[in-house]
Length: 448
Image (cartoon, rainbow, N blue to C red; front, side, top):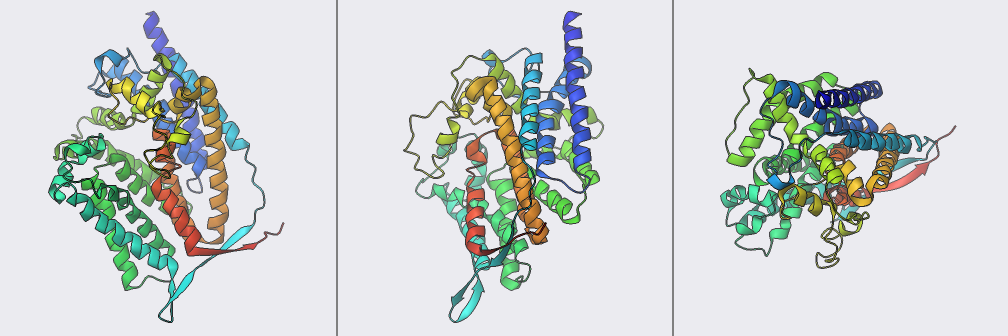
């Protein structure tokens, strides 16, 4: 009886906070989605909805809710507790403190004019040239990457092994394997197409279709990334929301309902090559199967709270630069990072890649103080970015596509909590340089 009462209290706590978060999000998205609301949405799914579903299944539903293929010695009795609820509440409090620390002020507006270069006495839009280059670079990289496996079919067969860090078992050559980094540049070409409002001629349309083809093929077949597919769909929904200043909550609900049936089927396809659609007759099981896609953040938090380890003191901020901006051979002594540690707790091995999520990231690094720092930093950063894009989009709505793309990256930060996957993400860095090179800036002060 004591354990049942304990579980009931935990359930009530999670449910109360979840209801509060839903009300907060609904209130803030009346005129369209924003950075803070998107962060809270993803965070609430990972750290509130997931434990609620776990509790319901453990006490009422008793459905087949296989969370993860955990190593038996690392398995905990349950993956929700008073302690984890307290930690996520502390994170949330400091997140709001970070948000409220950023004050809106009258900022200068940037008039961004597209740069041109002269080729054979003809002025050509530099942004247009970069878009074409990125589209065809990503297309060429697909074939070069496949050649390192001995062909496209073998590269597709190796997708699962590559995702789990065992791609070397399939490689025939590693000479040009690095070109996989260029394949995601295709999404940048798509973004550039939306920025080229006045230059959408024949070659711009070719750029769009080539880039879209690479985006879809690489996500569905070559890399088989569920998260990348979800981000692509969210990019479209966020773009519509920002463009029309509507929440499109109905569309997001439809997306959620479709995901209930398609994500488990997609996962089956990514693992076995066969699509298995969940039966509509078993809606509860389908929901739990879909939510299992998000559960490793909460599981990671429980591991962080219950396992013995040495704090890593935000080492990932430094080591995350390795392989992105500095050679892999540098910083070789920085191996005790949060992702390696978290992976070890899951599988008793360090070969796979299991990110800890944003809350466990803070706890692995500096305990409860790390959670406070990470929460405050996250709130401060998303609010700063939100204000920046409010000013940018107010000046020229075509930059909505940039805002929508950055909104999808919030999902990556919440879900992974790894700087290397977010702040040092190659695509974001290249996008930054594309904007710097493709535009020249003039400043006009906003009058009071």
